[in-house]
Amino acid sequence: MRWAPSRLPRCLSQSRSPHHTARTASHNANATLTPDQDIATILNRKPDQHGTLQPTRVIGTVRTIRNQKRRSFVEIGDGSTSRSLQALLEPHQAEGLGTGTLVALIGTWQRSPPGKEQEYELQVEELNVIGPADAEKYPLQKKFHSSEYLRTIPHLRLRTPLNALLSRLKSECDYQLASYFRDHGFIRLQPPIITSSDCEGAGEVFTVSSNAAAKHIGQADGSSLDGPDDFFREPKYLTVSSQLHLEAYMNEHTKVWTLSPTFRAEKSDTARHLSEFWMLEAEMRAEALSDIMTTVEDMIKHLLKSLGATKLVQELVTLKRRDGIKDVHSGQQVADLISERWTGLTEGPWPSVTYSEAIETLESAAKSGEAEFNEFPTWQCGLQVEHERYIAKSFGQGSPVFSLGTVLMNEQLVRALTYSFLMAAK
Image (tube, rainbow, N blue to C red; front, side, top):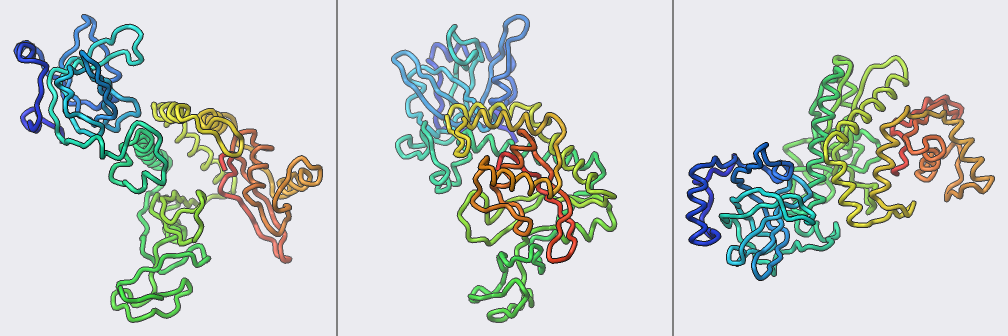
């Protein structure tokens, strides 16, 4: 749904001046008002071949306002881009406006004076306040806000340029992934969120019960409930993985995938552990591990190249460069690191190493002093995060690395595949 002119609230309607209003009415009578467009679209508009620009309507939230004696400069955002649209108002039009105010503007999209950062600006002729905001109490200001603080205002945090960008990025990822899997013969499934199985077998599950009075409502092994539960009759959990469901479907459909909510009850307050997240899982019948590896590499490269064709990645790099944040491990600017990793992910084939090669490389590095590990690499203990980082750096040179092979453990031959590719981003 879009705002039609007759539906725009007129709680606060301000025009440039009585004399100018008459000119505006005459101008609008002879020109067609362009349909509502988002700010990302408007910022890319240029005059036609005759240099003529039609009147433009935009709806957005005031990000900043700068008042001068003869004019006021207002930056407007609507979530469609991290950039702001600059609107030029007369001082009386800007009275009562503040950060967070939702406004509808009608004006002419015209070229800015030479030397301005934004090539074009909106010369406002009419302003309507849709949602007023108290600038002194509005919690979002033109400064850095930590993630912890933004979590205390979940209804407003998506108005920040970075969070709005991440929402658009996730939406585009969902679309591109669905397109890739559909084009390659995969069936998308919607496995249940409430399940009786603990797929991971570790017991870190959230138990679901309709008995609000129960304190110990069940264990991951399916033991007894604390009090009756007439609804479920047996322990139920929030899913930790859709793997078992996909494997059952795979026997009929050959190739299946899902992108669905996942829940983990691990008591770990780190960036590597989330209690709720969306996980992409896929199952396919393949004759060799190389078929799976090829699909994984091809899928991620397709996703990244498709994202690179949009302006989302450049927006992300620009925002990070503006923040000036450095990576805690490398000391590099995060913006530069994103660009390097993007190149490493999309260019050249991803190397693969056997488990034997990985362990031998790690042992050699540790003994020679080339690398220091908190845990010495051994066959029995598997690869730790610090080991994965070193392998990705040594073998991948910026690209992901597949680690696969055979591992002899407890006198049994266990086929092992580190399906989660080892990324330097870890």
